[in-house]
Length: 488
Image (tube, rainbow, N blue to C red; front, side, top):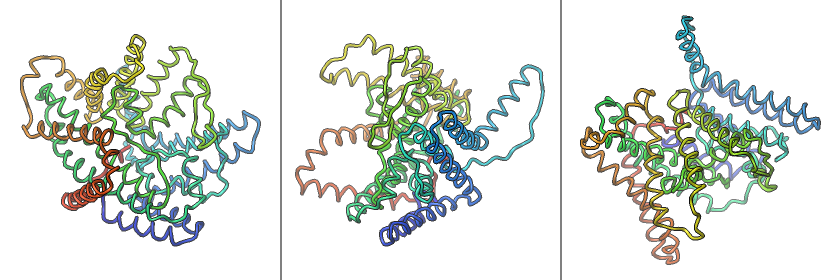
């Protein structure tokens, strides 16, 4: 079952109504059962993997909390990590590593073959694996206490709005909300419905209509593309994946909100960023913060403490040698790339971002930091950062590194900027969509709060906007297309 379907909207309506009508314990049980049904619409046989993850980490977290001896606590943490990462490795990375080992051995003259393995990647496995790991690690760090009610913990893990593609949630954010049901407020329904409508608009009206242009461009022979074609395809896919993934996040946040449960925001106009560091504070925010707290900082051996309110980590000290920071940067980004997919293109994507963050760190050493924002300098920085960020999507979309190198090579020859190799309308559509995205950011940042002061005007614009979005959603709703991040 996927969000952009009538089936899901009916399922959500039933879940919301029953959740508010039933007592807390029964309603929580309903969410757990309903979430398994939601996942089972894809493949029932992978539900046991979800339950194994829930049982292992529920038990390990309690054992960790019971013990004071550090080595004993560490053993249970390691056991949890081995189970979770072992399952993830088998389903997502076994074939990738096996193929590369065979290729390497063949290069050195040791010719071997491996039997064919038909392994299906379980939907959402990367997302819920990260959530189980963060839960156990937080208990180990004593940021949170383990949840003693198995149904409550299992519901947090399999809760259907975030199960398939995030946001990547922390137990400290969600468990208290599942344990303490809020009084019903009609605002939960209206706010949630607005977010769902926004998400459906981004998905079926924008992302799904961009997809044919992107598919056609990447299906062409890379050698026949010009530099302008490469830039256009990079921007087009960058817009597609942004609309597609932020659409999922909007619908997930809206679905949870209708039950009075607040999810953290996952996107904040990333293409308005004027630095790479800022870009990753705006793009897939829940994953970026997870990578920071559970991968980057531990690699640097930087201690992280709880903020005392949510259990989410804060840095205790950051006085690490620059060499440690740079090693951690490239290693973290390589792993982050591999998390997205078992392909060298994703690893390169991670190293690409690490490289530009590293360059940015060097430049910042020599940059004067004025007390006030210099809009001219910000615009220049934005004009440099966004094309580079968009070009990073080429290895994310290209089938192999050969295509990636061919497309990137076009950018270094002036003659490749003198021709166009695709249909003219793709360039126009790309320019209009990017302009629309930029204007939307400017409106949200500088204009919307002023309009909200005029109640009548604000209400009229809101009603008009949602009316148009609803009409367009029903107009463009077509045979179901999956969200891009489902493959991760």
